[in-house]
Length: 322
Image: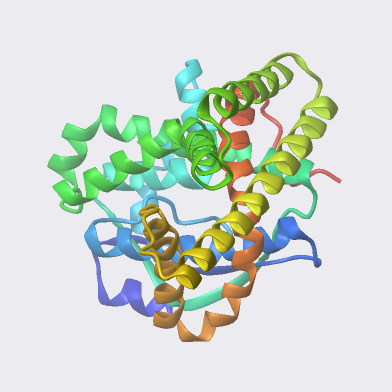
């Protein structure tokens, strides 16, 4: 599939396919199964349409030899500054793709090509893997915007819509911890009658404590703190879900118009995943894992950026250690 796509379009420097994670029956694996599906359904597909895929994963991608010959010297150069180390050494596949885009090549995604890959099965391994992914995505995205004039000049894939989507992704990585906590506190205020003057300081204190542990604590302490934060956020999500259902049920039973407008966001968030799954009808069973994703994603959105930035000097790979 990927070979035929490269043969049909000579402007493609690389093509990636759909990777399906494999692992034992654990919540962290279920989370990744839905996350992979969602990202390939939506992120990779949208990038493929409006511009260029920003990362062809090393686990299942085909690179054109002609394209690699033009960037192999730059790719083999060692990092000479702290910023280059963050851009180049935390995710070689993303750095390779950034270099290809600089040379004018477009990167594509084929949803009809599939492979499987083993994913982390423990929280510690998951955190170490995502530390690399978050840092690689964040700093390669920053590098793209630092050289955006050259990219727009050399690569026709860099349209206004594509640049806006990249900027939105970069912004989300930065603001996701605060935004997630604020949404949880707002939900507690509306649904559970917990005043913001109580929930916000509590959330801020928990977040500050987690930041302190990640900054000063050992890897074992960071892992335990991450598990604790995940448990707290999971309890908050379950509580909000129960009160949300009670709220909607009471309003319907009493014949009162539902005035809690943010409920529309819940419907939209569920609807986009269902719609994407229907477009990829063979993968509809992946929606089952969306329950684990809904339970864990607030904690992961809060914890991962903090953990990654606190351990940016760690050069270990994390998922290839026996």
